[in-house]
Length: 148
Image (cartoon, rainbow, N blue to C red; front, side, top):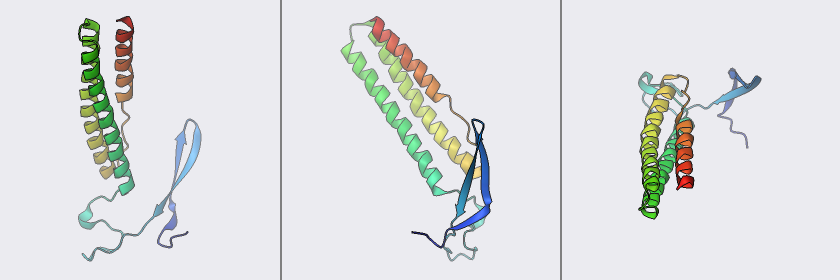
C-alpha cells in the first residue's frame, strides 16, 4: 500500500561507502500534521531540531540491551560467588563480573546520552569500545574459571 503523504525527494539521496562499496541511501520525507501553533507543516516548533523518532527509539532499545547485559553480568557474578565461595579464583571472577556489569551500565547510559545529543545536533555517532572491554573481561573470567 502506497501512502501519498510520503514523497520521494532526490535531494535526500546520499551515498555511503562501506568497505569500499558505495550504497545509496534514500530518505523519504513525511509531512507532519500542523500543530495549530502557526508553524508550517513539517517544520519543528521554536527552531528545535527534528529527528526521526525511529532513531531515538532504536537508541533507547540499544540502551536497554546494555542494561540487560549489565544485569546478567551482575547476576552471573553473584552466582559465581555463591557457587565458588571457598575459592579465591571464584572470588576474583565474581568481582570481575560484577565490575563489568557496573561498567556496562554506566557506559550504556553515557552512550545513550551521547547518541541522543549527536542525533539532535546532526553529528556523526562515535564508535564504542565497550564490546572490546566486555570481550576481554569475559575472556579473563573464562580463564580464571578454567584454572580453578
